[in-house]
Length: 575
Image 1 (tube, rainbow, N blue to C red):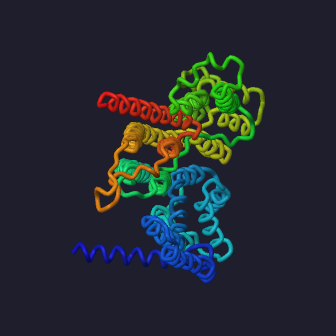
Image 2: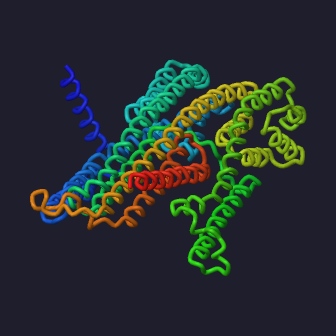
């Protein structure tokens, strides 16, 4: 039964790849000779290279493997392209349906709703799909129901296909678009929450797999350092090979985590004017990098005695492994600023649902303008959002246009969700939508998204602990292996001819400074990729990675320094 299921799954996967060749933008008759055939030639060339080139056996095995990966990537790319379209659709699907619902409550007809959505470039493939539906109606004179039904069979996303299919049925039965979409809201929130939590569950699985593979690669690197003592191979070659695999594993996990986590951006920094927050972020970044460069140059000059009185400065007494993390200390300045500002954005997102609900309810009850309602709301406590609300009131009261006032408001908050939902509220009001209905609709949906973000932050906190722990463990294992090799290579033992006429311990090929340099490179790369992984996992700004990068470097350097000292003490005691 299990074999049959696996065979059926493989057959379905193969059919999906073949079908994707017809769905991709580049025609198959061009893709096959231009991409697929050259990739196959590369695969054959790597096989020939593995046979002809006289190198270390493991490297000869890797050559055809890399060629096979290139060929398989070329074969599977059309499927990946289709999946990319599907992911792009599903990442913005919830905002798209909310936007459609808000437009449907206004005084425009349902075709104009679709035309407006087709103009929204931020929705990407969803906007393109709406344009195809509009073209089927306007150019080919199909009914809206028939156009939706036809496109539902062609889209790669099940969520979009299901929405279009149900739209086709309900609109054909005579139901109004706004009534249908309002009924969809609860289903939409529940479905979006389920998919979001499934992605977080996948992140938990990937975290365990990441931990297992990094531990395996750590032991492989230790063996690559120590085993040449017994085999006589070049330790630089074996260590470099394992380091390349280590790099590929970490890069692979970075892209995997980037693919599975929900695309839910926190920041909105695309507005055209310079806010105080942008100035602080830019200023702190320039200051941090500038101080790092000054620190590096200063330590270098003092180390080599190029500065008068440098002999009195105890730079050389600092363990060599600590030079690099010391130079990155100034990066904590921009990291701290980014972290603080992002915390403010989170707090504004948490306060915005209450504000927009109160604004909509007050506008509906008082039958007055937004400026008059804000004169009362500005005195309420909405946390970090209070200052932005007061600025919005001042701009509206100074007769700045409504559109510009709201644009400055969203620009000052730097929140992606506030920008999108404020734009929806403004467009809905301009087109005649009811403020109370709009406020409640936006508030309900945004509250659900904010709650999911809190779950994501908790999940990421666990990942932070795993990354920091595995960094310390890996650094300990790396330097234990290096010190073991150094200890054995320093022994003056004459074992020539004792085992089959050869040597028991091969120490002549060891270049310990070069091996230590390679390990330091591994620690730097691990800190860099791990800090990016943590940023991708929580959806925050990459500027926050400065703190994690510096902290991971310090963990690796301190662990390596302590390990070297402990091994040195143990050896001195034994001797």
